[in-house]
Image (cartoon, rainbow, N blue to C red; front, top):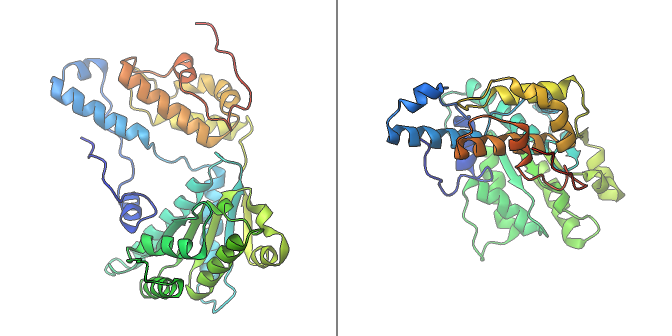
Length: 331
């Protein structure tokens, strides 16, 4: 049975990140309608709760973007292994819903698992740090995000230098090799605070012997001016985009449909709806995942136990995927 929600399990805390690494989604057993009906009421309820929890976090599909990000990031980590300064980094940029966070967290997952396999007995290592840039961030706020991930105390009497020195010390001692910085679009280089946040991140990248990876919505705009040129000169750019209606999209729909645990669902029946899903989601992988997960949850809650076109239509679209109102098809 799924465990109750716990505090402090976000990816932006070390505890949450470790939980993400250690507990990939595990599918409950697939039961036939007759097998389900034969369960005692309490076990049926527990089974449904397990399935609901599973469908809220389906396994990640390794899209071409994820594969490219993992391969590029891995190469940069190796190239930076013996660099004394001017380490190279990676920027993943694109519209909302195109899989940027998935791509960089999968890179982090791959790096952490590889580090663990190489150092199985060194429990003090923190191979990956994952932080997000808060809205209207200040240098102290971004430094505090690093400290929060590491579980370091941050009080009002700590100035930014104290926080930075503590973070750098822990990351160096813990052999951090990869730093993931998400929501980079919350930085505005045209504002004083934004420029100072960029300088703080640059300082972290100079002090922490790790490969830095940034992700955000259309962050190419940050690459203008002197500070932007400094970033552009040291970072590789991967652009994410909506998927066209081509074989990869069809493969994504097929793979996601095969992960569902519904009593009446045929594993690859969603293939028949791949064009409909592309038109509805605008080729956005984030919207596709939301649509399928949401419809699967509804199918469990309503007892229909299968995904249909009407069931998918009942899941509201996000604005990025649906710029124009769409008419509901007649039942």
